[in-house]
Image 1 (tube, rainbow, N blue to C red):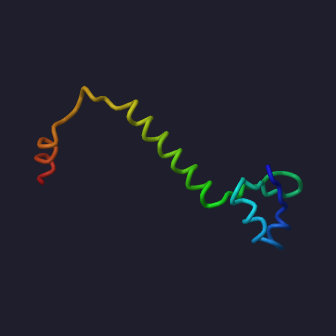
Image 2 (cartoon, helix red, strand yellow):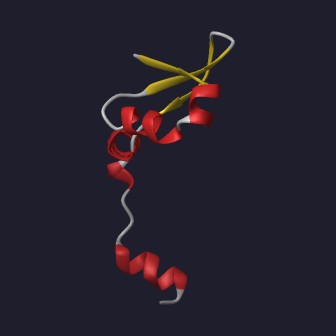
Image 3 (tube, helix red, strand yellow):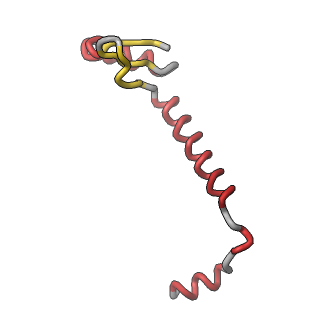
Length: 79
């Protein structure tokens, strides 16, 4: 893990952001991590993985034996 202080981030943000493109950078204040900076590609992959997990959980919890026909739903909604 790469570490940078908040002061480093303030004085040279482009360099710290550049580092975060390949691997997360822990932003520290007084030797304690306050935040993580991740590049766009890493963030998008994390979000995609999280969405996949949410979808998988929804599918596992779905009750496919209690399916309602689309025509019935449409009729109830008046469409």
